[in-house]
Image (tube, rainbow, N blue to C red):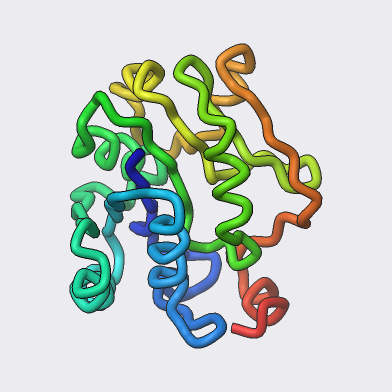
Length: 190
């Protein structure tokens, strides 16, 4: 299983690149990479905005995690779907992929271990936090061709809404609260 972290956006509603924000002593990008490696043997990061600073973080982390790679998404400004499609195309089609976002401070390795323990070769495993479906999402290799033409601002929500029979939802009691607007930053003390 390969981890795919989507960290390419400019975070326009927040006003600064969220992947570079520091939470509990580490950037959200670094935190996401460490979380991904708690369940994955290799991790790929999709980059776009603030690419130089993100690459510097990744290069430093490659000392500890040699199986950490990144891809620059040329048209990252088209939206999350573009990053997802580019990232999936760069990972061997025979591998299951765990898709993560870098702006979920509440996410823990326990969430990821619970989610990946339900791996199913025919169904995507989708996390739900108090009824809010969100990445992390485990996409088995058999379903990856469904994303071949993914692009633009099509996040994973479109996938689970259009394909409920191909998804298994794992429910967590944690409240969903990402880092999207300045109020979220204040909430998380970032």
